[in-house]
Image (tube, rainbow, N blue to C red):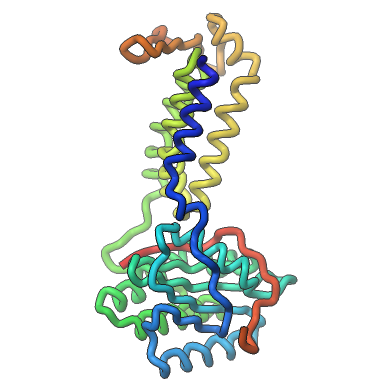
Length: 299
């Protein structure tokens, strides 16, 4: 029954995901360096951006494209942007040097998706500062021409080594120590869960997942970084079931982990909680790869 209860929780969590999150909308055809499906750019701005991106590609082989869409239809911009970037294959297969700028107008979200080969130059932090800086200001004013053009110019400037986006005025990155403190809280409960006997162990495992995702994102400054922290948490938590000292503790023995000691913690579904012991055009992609690097933001 305990195992069945755990699987029931997992199934309910999967069913709770909206269908459009899984299916998503179709990836549009790559018709040029600028694909303005939301129709927010003037013809002059589109020509200017296209010229900038073509000149940059001619001199570096980096491929940058801009995509505007009316709506994400419920899909996260991270998921959608990565699907588009991988389908279009921006950048060369040898260098993976592609960048995709996506703007979802009705959702008021934007993202810079960075290929593997450019993540060292156009870091998550720099991409985030571009989005949270002049681009956001222009978009809040309703000036999409200025916002997209500025974003493209700053992306190119970073890749050329001529521009380093400043931190937006009045906005600071989350301090590293804050992320550590925020991560320490779910880690404490993770330790409790590792030594819990019964179904409560798996309830805690599922319950703590969003906390590790959020704290990991704060600590690393990016959503993919949060996913990595979440993955490490899952490996450690599940792997602890096979550790001999953890097994001994669950059997009621007191075991030592350095200066600490622990014994098994029991949980009961009928009790009042925890109980424990005190212890298309001429422009096309070149086959570049993407892994989720970049940054997202809104306005």
